Length: 516
Image (cartoon, rainbow, N blue to C red; front, side, top):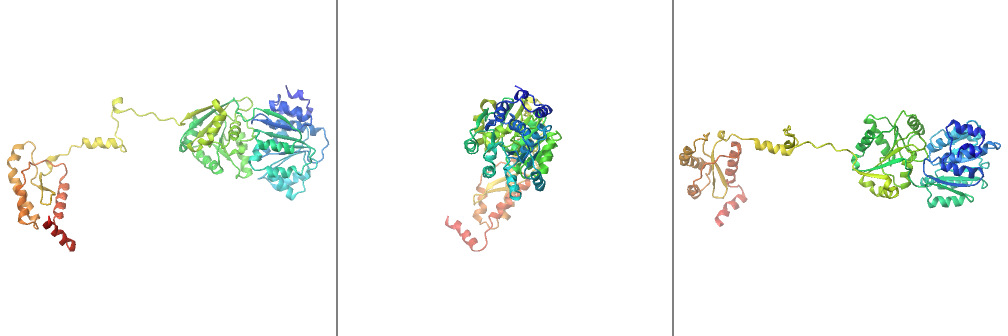
């Protein structure tokens, strides 16, 4: 089937040719004939299937042949960007028909929007909140409306617009044609359809499923590695334009700054941005001046941008439907696309539901950053690497390699005093290692000299204690395992320990040996 088979007005056919529409999509092929017959339609189809054209084309065709008398059609949208896109498509398709339209959205000049309403337009495209604000200032005449469209109705309800939507519907004539389009069909949408529609015809095309034209990957990683994985994905995949979805407005700003520091051209969009900034960012992204845009879910619904080849879910969406909408930005109109989701430990509970829904079409990969190859060991390489200062094992090797020259150290003897403490006694200067026999012959002399040197230090010892070293066994001199200064300090501490303490506790301490 082609659009020519639908018996549309010739001026509308010219608009379709201008934008390159030749064959309707499945949702358009089934919906347009029903709408041209004047029936209410409840359309459900996954994102990227042409739902906007499914209601814009028949509305324009019916308005052309009717006299212009106030607002003919009202289209409600959940986001500003989607409302602007719908208005752009109305302008393109109705260029040769003389159909007029205006957008009533937040973030833009309030007085200009009021002037457009006063002047009278055929089609009004609005977000619910801003339209209600206008009704508080203007006496907007809704009595002439013949067509009401709720686009992305499930998203509108998720954003809490249901009270505003009901308030607006109450002002519209009940005798009208109502069109409700949604990517999902939860119970709340079915209930809303029963309340506001008259025997609607259901058109359902692959609801809540992902398209086969999108290659889906998920990396199970540590949350601290997300930025590295994003860089790795951008470096290893072929892409022309990329949308990176985040969960929060703050996270959007932070990620934009981090990617900009890496030298990448990045723009960002979220709800707190001024409308001029949002328009500029989206315009630069659509024109290819900026290849990467970081956004919250404001770009997940209905935005039609050509050649988006890569989607990155920096944060896992909290609902399966949001995941389907996000990755639906790529792989549109029979084109191929890639969708990558970064899953940290904190995201696993949300990702499990997505994995169950998508099934085998989603490839799950543990880790996202390629590990650097390990260095060869010295045995394997046959070469000794320069030791690393930070490597503790290298430090141990260095200590083993040190061979201190003990010939330059003084020899000493060790003995046990009356208190059971070890005493180090210096007995000589430099000795030659090659004269062990001479050392043995000089041993008694050295011991006597050591006793004489020890005597002055033990002034407070009694005669019994002074004679005790004579009974000690002869010990052969040993080479010290510590340096001279260390030995001297040990001897000094040993002497100080034998000095009587002063004061009351000194008297008590001096009496303790008597009770032993």
